[in-house]
Amino acid sequence: MRRTTAIALLLIAILCLSGCTSLSEQNAEVQEAALRLGEAYSKQGDYQNALATYEKALESVTSKELLYNRALMLAALQRWEEADIAAADAQKLYPASLVFSTARISFFKAQGLQDKAIEVSYQILELDPCFEAVAVDLLAMLQSQQRQEEARALARTMISRGIGVDKAKAVLLNNL
Image (cartoon, rainbow, N blue to C red; front, side, top):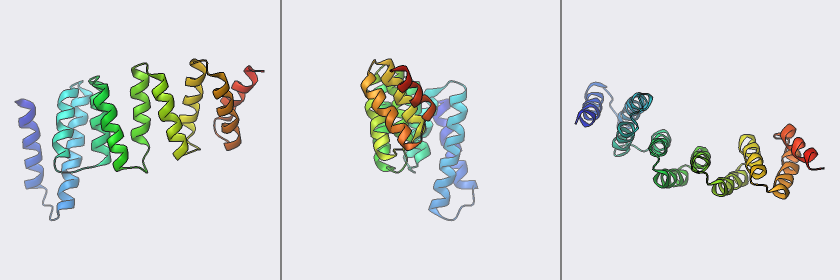
């Protein structure tokens, strides 16, 4: 009851006191308040209330930040399948932003699902061939899975793209 009351009062106060004249300004205020409140809950380890805050705000406004934080809270609660679905659905809404796909990699790695993390990494690199952090992480995952041929092929590709060159060279030199 405390959580619901806090969320409801915060949203009502923002809408009544903000002095906003347009719906877009009100939506921005709701989003900002939900992000602040959700972050406060999250910092206290109260992931359930943070999740509830983001979900309540998403009833009135859709934003990349709210969707991302919702997926993170589902993961923090170890509701992995829901977190993956939330991130995948959000990625469809915001295809230019790869933040949801990179979150999915983290979700899969946290569960020990390396093959799924590798699959999503390849998908990201198809969309952004120069995403260095993903390429370097993928290289490490391939090596840890003893997928040396794939690791060497990725290393050569990375060198040709000028990303993660030192790590890619190390992979190629270690396999001579």
